Length: 88
Image (cartoon, rainbow, N blue to C red; front, side, top):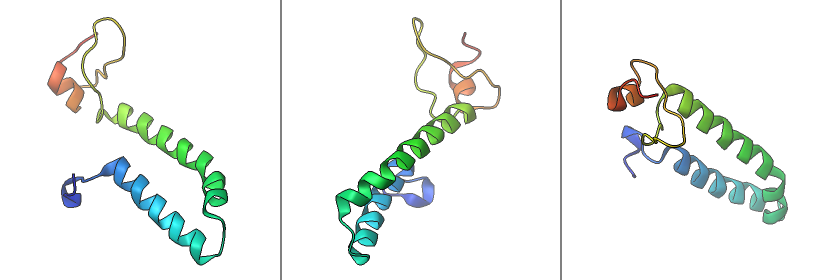
């Protein structure tokens, strides 16, 4: 998890690092930390949502095959295709 040279924390590391940087920024500017958090929260959620969509489209975080519900990325050359084959 801490091997950042091999991918490391990815989304979680960015979130943790952003929270720490935001707290330090707010304190340096003498802003209330919770008010600053309220201001940046919508952008944070939007960024995480776009990142998850990108992961799915790239075939990175494809999860496990579900026979009853869910999607499987079927693009040859992706990790999902290599692990599961052409699952429909």
